[in-house]
Length: 311
Figure 1: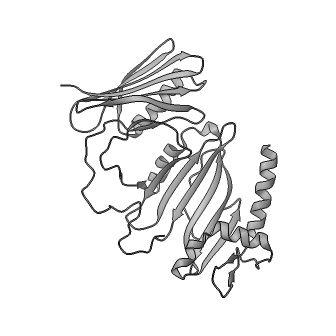
Figure 2: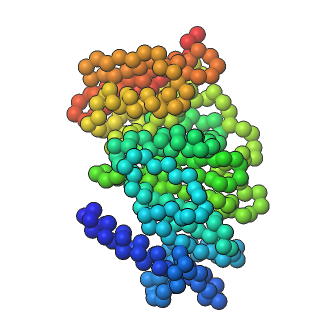
């Protein structure tokens, strides 16, 4: 099945490489892709319209799509850290009035690479990128996070573009599907619009309402939240994970995320099916943390993370 999917994907990619963008205007103007003369036929028009949505023509600009199977465009140069064993499927570059507007790259990353979003956060930080501002408005958003269809993170170098987004999909029995999107110009030209790296109008997010950082499951682990809550002096989050991964290895994976969030490990211990660790939290007040993983039978794992203020 995977071989069939690969062949189909290769055929689609080959068609797109030769496809020019058919602008949706009465002139019928075509813009060639990757310097190749546009080819006729229904397939070319369909591929062009699917890859460059029709709403892009609403601003009267000229758009062009260039495809780079197995490679990145030679210009502009972009930051694209790649975990060991990554296969670069390819990239697309969109131009607006002949200037680069956005870039998308597709990668297959081995499941053994572990926490890919955390990898990008570390490596992009070395290149001058920082996480996008929190727009949560101070509402609790930490603790164990049930896996969505894709896990995404946004990064900035300032309020103005470029803006960077990484999304990771984890299909079962296949490499992690990683998509990197970089906006090189603001895709929303309307007055007053702000992007993911600008501070929106209104009061700033409130601080101190959530002491628990978001904790995401490692690759190959299915996790569902089961409870949590708290108040001004105690907060907790509980979840259930389905995996063959041992309690020790799961505790290690979540501990790495706590360290990345500024938590300092105090001690750790294992006892049979249980692995736990205690922590010191950053910031004001003497907050202490607890991380516990329990193998409760078969492939079921019980997870608990807790933060408590020591009076």
